[in-house]
Image (cartoon, rainbow, N blue to C red; front, side):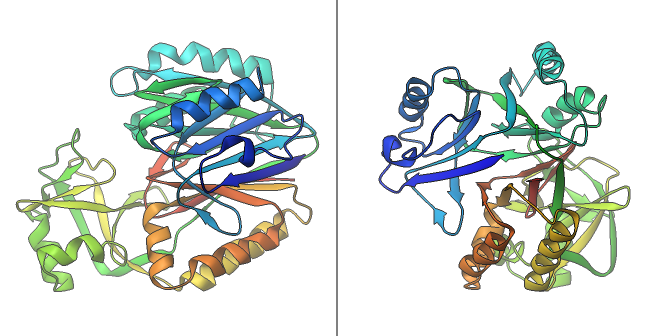
Length: 351
């Protein structure tokens, strides 16, 4: 297969798709003001080609903060794109769409991946999607877009998840998740006083969550929101840790970017040697796939901010480009199979 990446910093879609011929699947990464226009234009330019889109920054060897980016697959790919609606209340109502698409693509865990762009309620959405995907152990990579809207096949949706099943007809696929954090000390907490709907963490081991965080790290209320770049929470999920970013202070509680439930076991994390970790991810991918045709990744907005603050973002993208054709989305939350994580990188590699 072949991956295409095109951009226009000024938001001219025709410029972004220049050189794109006979695509078999397209991802649109646009800006809030032009999203609807770009969705309609893309469908007019490539009618009937499966596509999904969201509002967000894109990248290959540099980040496109504004304008529009287009990622497309061609030459040896089959794809089906669709949408589950009402994700805030009842995404399962539309699950038959995914079931039908699974039959159409007829893929398996070795050659097929599900890529999704979501407007919110991610944990519930991923659980819903995975009830079908797990029947054939098909992996999932995706993320949350901005502005509460996504697109599928030329139509804009609110309160929805746009997804695509992509089958590599000429090789395998494999997904990866990169975590640049590790536990800080032996801190372990039981969450309580949570508000699941608003992602609020009220208490840790029976004490106000804000107070516990401040006492350990010696930070003020204002510093909490930037300190989460270095010290987020982590939720134990089997032998894995899902990162939880802090969004804002709410009284003595902390509002987060992903749901925390009463009795969840949480750790306090600290930033590791992110440069060495990124190199290890590249080494692992190269070892697994000596020949690669494409890499699509989702990097968290907080990773982008952290890497930019440390003057590492451009270096990181250059290093990832050694894998070959690498492009992706800066997301507001990352999806990996049935897990919704923060401050992470998830990606799918096509042989």
